[in-house]
Amino acid sequence: MEPQKWRRFLEMAAAGKGLVSIARYLAEVSGRPVVICDLTLRILASQALPSKTLHFGDYLLVELPRETVEGAFYRGRLQKTGTGTPFLMLPIGEVTLYGYLFLLEVGEDWRPYREPLKAAALAAMIEMSRARIAQETERRYRNEFIQDH
Image (cartoon, rainbow, N blue to C red; front, side, top):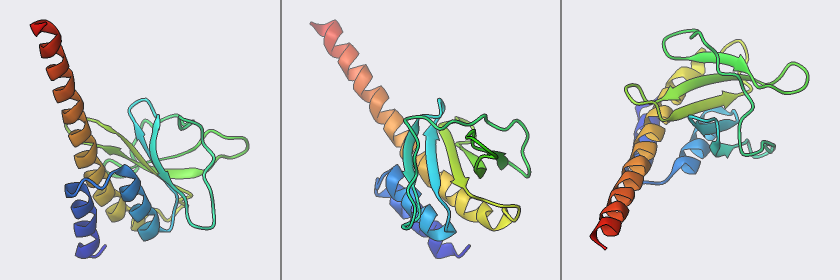
């Protein structure tokens, strides 16, 4: 993947563009649908290709794979009727796990998607860690306010 695409993912995260923008750009770069979930598999952002729509509820119905195919990459299938949609998944975060990034409709030749998925996962980690820090700060101030009164 070209360095300018890595840079664009990181610029999006630095500017606080949000998970939807990251998912949209990954779908554009990869040509595949994208789903970003939290640790409970609640869908935080998703992006289909312009000619398609994604039909999920609030949660992604998937059993997380237990073994990687290479490095931190996982392959599996969504739990639907029939064979299910194949996916490539990368956890978001290394030391602290924030969620999961799924690239859908990935066939046997999944290696070209490694770099875009890594870049998007890094951008998503920045975005999700920023949101977690904001929530923790808000909670701390709320607790201090309650204790002061």
